[in-house]
Length: 225
Image 1: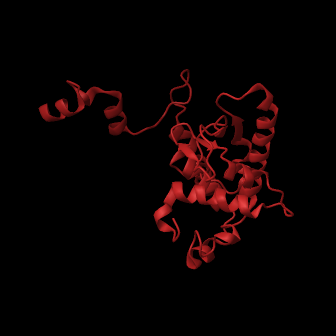
Image 2: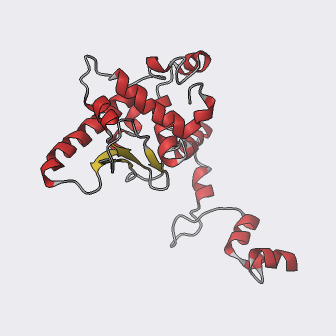
Image 3: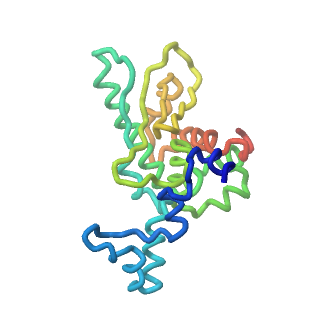
C-alpha cells in the first residue's frame, strides 16, 4: 500500500474515481436526471452486428482514400514576403495544394519510384493500395497514420522563400506536433512545382513529393534513401 501510494502520489489511491471505475466497470451514465440510463444498458438492445459497426466507426481512424483527408489539407505562404511577390506566392501555394490533392488520388507508389525509391517487391505489394499515399502523408505530418478525432484538424504546408540561393531541392521540414510541413521554395523545388505536365499526375513533382514522405516515414526501408 505504501509503495503504491508513493508511485501514484496519492495517500488513498483506492478511493479515486479511476480505481472505482476499474472496480465496477466503465458503465457511463448518459443522463444526469436518469442515472439508470447507462451506456451498457443502451448497448444491450443493439444487435451484435450493429455494435461491431459502432465500435468500428469509433476506433477505425485510418483513411480509406483521398476523400477522407482532402478537405483537411491546407497550403499557405509563411515568412516575410515582399509586397510585390505576395500575389505570386499565393499562386504558388494554390498550385502546391492542387498538386498534393491530385497526388493523393493516385494508387500505390508513383511508377517512377519502382527500383529507385521502392524495391520491386514492395512496389508490387502496394500497387493496388488506394489509401497508401494518404497513410504516408498522415504518418509524415503527425507520426501516426490515424486521422485525428473531430472535424477541425488540418495538415498544413507552409511555403517559404530560401534564406540563401541554393540550387538543390531542400527537404520538407516536418513538424509533427503541429501536423505541418515547411516547404522551402529553392530554385530546384520551384522548377519542379511550376513545370507544366501533359497529364493530370505530374510525374516529376509526385516523385519528389513521394520521396519526402518516404524519408520522413520509413526511409531506411527503401533502397535509395
